[in-house]
Length: 360
Figure (cartoon, rainbow, N blue to C red):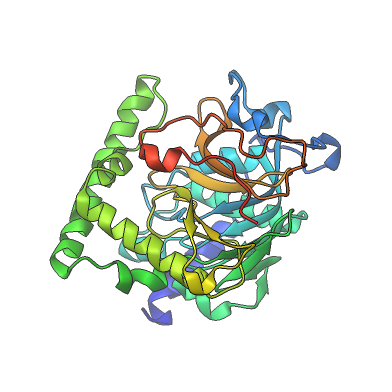
């Protein structure tokens, strides 16, 4: 894709950013007076009953870092309203946008930019302007931004990949993951067939969501459910996971966080012998999923726990899918104590049964 192809899109996005904001929307104050001084895992795992939003009640959830990817602003399947609710509720010191934030591919095919997408983009810029350290790692759908790596635009730093150092000193490599497409391919026929079937699944997913919403049911991803039961899809996911883990082992990191394949996961894997040391025998694989199917994200809490979460639009809270302790645990604390983790339809039991552990 050439720069000329995006001249119209550039003007559209610039005009959208200049559009006046809706002064009546509920946006929590960024004042530190309203921020809670601490947060623990139980505040995430016990959703409250939402008769009003957390934003309206200033009941913000605070984390150290938050990872989002595959938002696909400009795509009609983007869950922009849910994401805006999350951004108005969860506060963080570090916000990492791990690729495919704006879907330039979709915008090239058909211009789709509703007000909710505009508000999300404006909210991300607002956070960067008000103290949140925002970093943008472009993916394949927003590859037009890749040439601007190492620059800072509107207080948002742009990078191809980055290493985040957590509260406990652990290092997490971040990248989108589109560079591993060649390792994932399961054959040209299956790739073409998969693209068409995925478009069909998203169409069905969109209409099913509308029906469930009218009936008062929470969001549920048919597309993710079907992918978990298709052998070729699972093969491709496994190949992608292995390629990402192999790549991350070349760096002195404790884990890797990526996106790209719209398959949220948090798991621990043994290192290859050549990369294994007495203090580093395992490596974390974290995929923060997407905001087309799953409405999922990765967080690092203030007590050093890495969590895979899904946004619950009904309770206006984070539902924990799995978690791993990264910060050093005090000696008197039970390091291996199991922690109940809610099961979900979009994850296999093997993925959901991750127990907290120290990977240092």
